[in-house]
Structure formats: C-alpha cells, structure tokens
Image 1: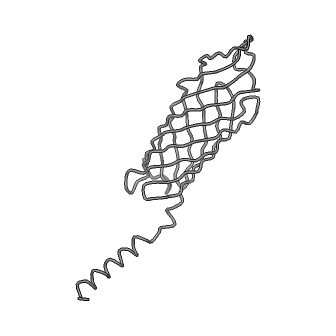
Image 2: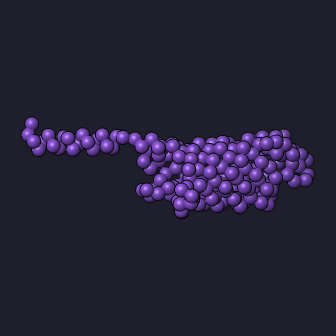
Image 3: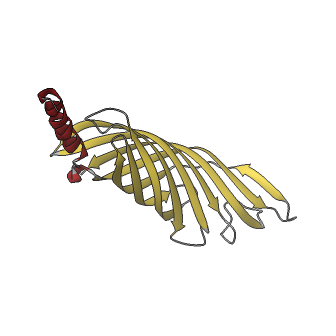
Length: 194
C-alpha cells in the first residue's frame, strides 16, 4: 500500500466518522402554534322528517386552535410529527381535543421553512356536538425571526374536517337526525419553535 492510498483511506475514514455522528440535540424539536381558521365551505348532511337524506350548506364561522407539535428528524429533510391540540369551532359551536400524526418536508438548509401534511383525530368535549372527527391539514410554515432566543414561525394552511354527527343535536330546524358535517377552511398560524 503506497502513501497516497493510505492518506486517501484516512481522509475517507474521518469523513465517514464525521457524517455518521448524530447531533442528538436537533433530532427532537417542538413548537406551539395558535391557528386562526376561516371557514370556506361547510356541508351538513342530515335526515329530514320523512327520513330522507338531505344536504345543505351552512355558514361556518371558523375556528381557533392551540396546537403543540413535536418532531423527530428521520432524515435531514424529513420529520415525523406528533400533534396535540385544543380546537374551538365558532359555528357550529363545539370544542375538541385533537391528536394526530404528520410529516414535515424541509426545503431550505439552515432554516425551519417546511411543507407539512397532517392527519388529526378529533375527540369532542361533548357527544351532543359530534361523535368523532377527522382532519387533513396541508400547509406551509415560514421561519421568520428570532425572538427571545426562540424562532418565530408563521404558517398558512388548508384544513378539511369531517365530523360524524349521529346522535348529536341537529344544527338546523326540521331535522330528524344528524349524519355528518364536512368543512374546509384556510388558516393562518403563529408559532414558536423551542
């Protein structure tokens, strides 16, 4: 083995050791967000007095959500996300606890800008409002500033919610039985990364 190959192997070994080291302080990250969502469309499905299925559009007033996310970096550009939140819907008026999972795709090095896809499961505070719900959230989050040694995040989202409303109180008059509520909304989010 000549000296050139030996030096090349030593450089290669140092590079492999350097790239295989994990920075454990950056694998887990957490954020807290306040989301303001404006309803775009709400479709209520119910059974009328003749027991026929009907659908009607209702005027939703949006929601307010306090969310906590914890991320685990799977790869340099991809994180798995755990979600827990409290959500308050304004019209119809009900509240829920949401738990879920998601993915974050980071596309700028050395910054916390990302695209996100999340699934959430709604648990109502009262079964009179709905039985259970599901949410798909697609969004973009921007890392905008450093405040008190924390990163300020601003996000834009599209939400699609589906609520099972069997055995819940009707949202409109002349309803024999509720079936479901589908809502879509756009939202803006303000968050802090810890």
